[in-house]
Image (cartoon, rainbow, N blue to C red; front, top):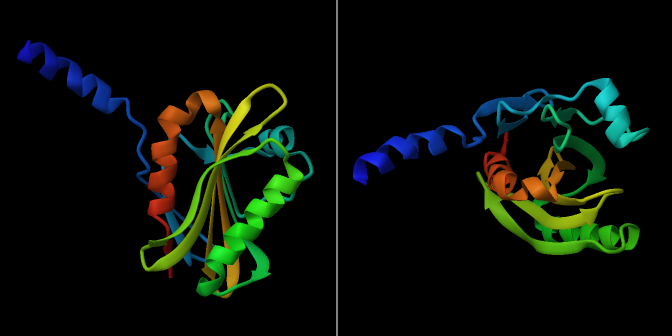
Length: 172
């Protein structure tokens, strides 16, 4: 039995998705790790999924389009001490603009010396539920917005990866 366990375990460990590809944005002021399964979203894929919404500095997706990672610097001025208030404001806006969302967890935590506000929630798309993970931090006095989402059926696989991505955030 031990031999069988030793033979099967490596199969499962190789199939795991890991955030291990370094990505820099905003003139290398922001760095995150993302899995190699995510690559730059094509313009066509962007149009299909996000329509006329302005394209952010970073737009990654998996090959099926069921997983996305976006990042952009907003024009919203802020300081670290406002992160809780900003997170609460974003929750209020989400509830107002997307009735029926379910907040799973929210908070503010220290990540590599910076305060990061976050919101995990589920929302409805046209034909399925979506798991969302929004995170916010201050870069050069403005709000950096990170948005991860995947279909609800992929949440079990991808939520831990999303945690790794946000946990890898480094702001210089």
